[in-house]
Image (tube, rainbow, N blue to C red; front, side, top):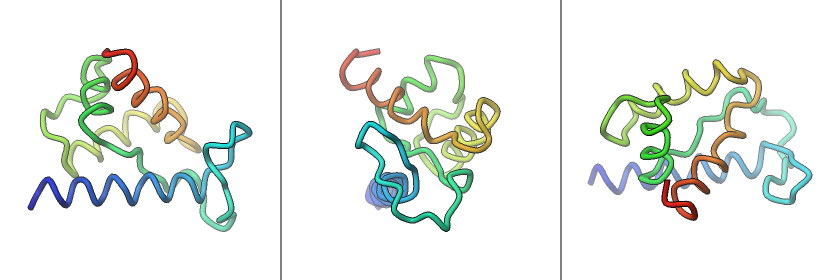
Length: 99
């Protein structure tokens, strides 16, 4: 059940990212203009979690709500207004680069 909830929350965070964030690469649509990107959480899955741990921005071993809070806090140190922009790099390093 915990894995199901984690997957569900990850999907919701991805959807919110697409709808709220605006980029010029065609990944994020940005059609919900009334919600700030500062309120978004980075989608956290096995790939982004593993890369975040290897980079030292996440210490918690589980990919759960506490880990998501920890990752959010750390990424917001880099960019408080749009910390979710780092999600794409974390995912790509994990999936395609085997980081």
